[in-house]
Length: 111
Image (tube, rainbow, N blue to C red; front, side, top):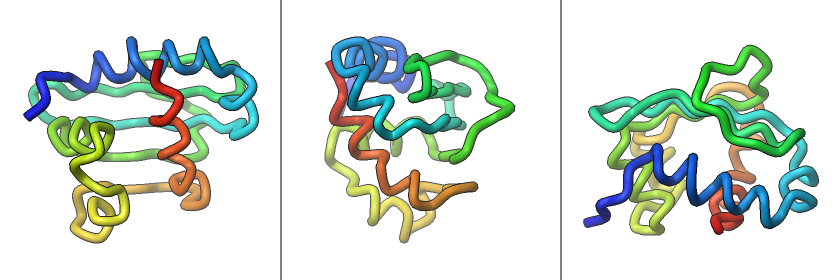
């Protein structure tokens, strides 16, 4: 079991990946809202138009992802497949489903 928290994933790993790979992030060119519930939850924006990560609620998100904190960490760590998470209701998506399919690319940018 991972000791990572969603905050560490967003503010350290993904943010660092965006700094190291800004062209790849801008290629996706979208705003994602992540609503993570649970004791380690929160609201984060992954804005690939800039690119940057912010802890807030976006007004212009094209894709909103909803998950529990543990499920999110498991998905990022690779122990929960995104398709399985979606099919079992552990991953909720509102907005552009095509953008949701690009989530793995965001997680692969991790620093």
